[in-house]
Structure formats: C-alpha cells, structure tokens
Length: 400
Image (cartoon, rainbow, N blue to C red; front, side):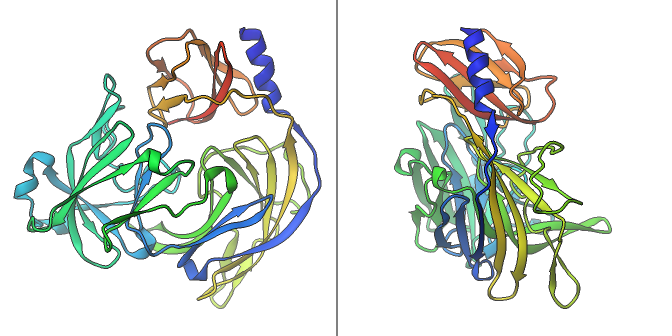
C-alpha cells in the first residue's frame, strides 16, 4: 500500500504549464469592505468589514478566535482566571497587553496568545482524552463600537464554542454558543456584540483564493511597535505563496521560488508611498499555490488609496495540477499548527500515515498510532497523507 501512496501523492504535486492571463481590480472601499476573489472566476463576494467583533475558526478541531482590529476592536489580556470572573475589575488595565491577530497564520487570533505549551491554546487548555478545550482566561474586550466587555471562552466541545460576556461590573451577562455545523464550508463564523448575534459572512472556502482587506501591521519605532492599518491581500487556508523580485513580471519562471504559508506574504508591500502618491514595485510578482495544487501568478499594476482603496492587478495560471482521486472523508488533525505532536481523528481505520514536503518528498512515515511526533522537523507547511481501505486523503499540516 505504501508504494501506491507515494505514486499518488507525487502525482498530486505534478503540474502542467498554462497561459491564460486576466487583468482585474478589487475595490475595498478604503477597507470598509472585504473582497473575496477567485483567480478563476473573479470577485466572489464583497462583504461589510465593520459588522463584527469576533471571528471563530470553523474547520475541524481548530480553535483560533480573531478580533476585528481594523474596525477598532481590541482584546486585553487580563490577570484574571475564569474562577475570578465575579471579582474582575480593570485596575491596572494600562499595564495589560493588547493581544493581536497573527499576520502569519489564520489559526492564531487575538485570543490565542500567551501559549505556554503544546496543549495551551491561549484562551483554554486542550484535553487529549476528550478532544475538547476548556477555557481558563478572562479577557477585556473593547468592541468596535467602543464599549468594554469582560469575556471568557467557556469551552469548545462537540464542535461548538460556548462563550460568556458581560459588562465590566458583571451586569447584562450573556452566554452564547456557535455551532460549527451551522456554518458549513467556511473558515470562520462571526459574532456582532452590538446585535448579540452570530453572522455568516464568508463565501465557502473552496470558492475563493485571496481576500482583499484592511488589517494592522507593526513597525519598530525604537523599543516599541507602532501599528497602522494597510490594505492588502491575504491567501486562503492551506495555500502557499512565494514573492519573486528582480525579474520581469511577465516571466513565469518558478524554478527558484521558495514557498511559505504566511497569509500576508502578498499583503501590501507591492506598493510604496513616496509622500504624495503610491508607486507599484515594478519587478515584484507573487506566485500562489492553491489547496488543489494549481499555481497562479499575480502582480499589481496600480493602486488608488484614500476612500476608494482599489487594487489593480493581473493574474495568470502558470501551473495546473494533474491531480489524484482523493477520498473525501471526515479526517481532522489536531492541533494544527503542531509544534511537537498531533493527533488524527478519523472514523475509518488507517493503514499508513506519511508527511510530505511541498515537492512530494516523504519527510516522515508512521504506523497508525494515538499521536504523531513532529519534533526535529523544520517549521513550515507540509502535507499529511493517510491511507485507509477506502482510499487516500491529503491534508495540509503546519509545523511551527
């Protein structure tokens, strides 16, 4: 079975050259809207980016929780544990850390900071026996409308988040639940504190490749990091990207590319501000490898800042997968990203498990077992392949 597995997975990474090219633009309304874009089909959906406060990760056992920073929401890491909920106050708040969403991975949001161990998820602890997460930390949330709420995530169990929030003095306490099954096919479900309601904002993840949005980045200013908002592009989950400089953007040579899974690798640095206007970096192109293995080139041709926030760009398909017949099952990997160990949840009995790099080389293989070690493996994006009597499954696994 292992020989068949290797042949199929190598086929998954094989690509054929193509030549279709499309010029397009994405209008972000200065960041007040998010534009979900498909390389194949153009703009998929434009949504209001100011109607939510928290975003809860939906896929599998993943548990990232983001804060709508671009709209003014902030989360402060308080010294209070869940057991101290009734005693919470804001004394000493000026010394509390503002926890920010990661600009590198979708799975680390403002509630996923202060991670101290493999099973510490920031807002709670993962139980390897029950495959649930129990909250242990109380946060202070400044909502996008400027009000302050104390918040803790009570649990993630049976594919449902339960969270509790109240005014700082404890009044108006509410308990809410977001069930992952109510938001099929999307990366995140959202919550609006002004309306006390959950939102389904995103298109299905298989329908888009990049999203144009506004987000803060930090620049070093002496000993401090100063944050300011930029408009740029983020890649979808399970994608890889490479930035290429110093070559004609029309050139489709990908032989020297170095791939990574940083969601803001495209970001906003394809333009510079000269003090009066934005200038496009003429010899900078990006190559995006999608979750199905297709490779697209994107380079930018213009940008209109201010209230419009319009990004002008050209895309081209430079590689198309030959592909494999992958068995679609209910396999889930947890935790992902993994730093020491991960576990696999799947109803079908496994026959083999292998970890491959982006070139299809087997990095490590295991017999089916309770947990799998990634100690000693260089950080990066890999592909976990599992085989059962029903077929082959391929899933991305981020090692950090």
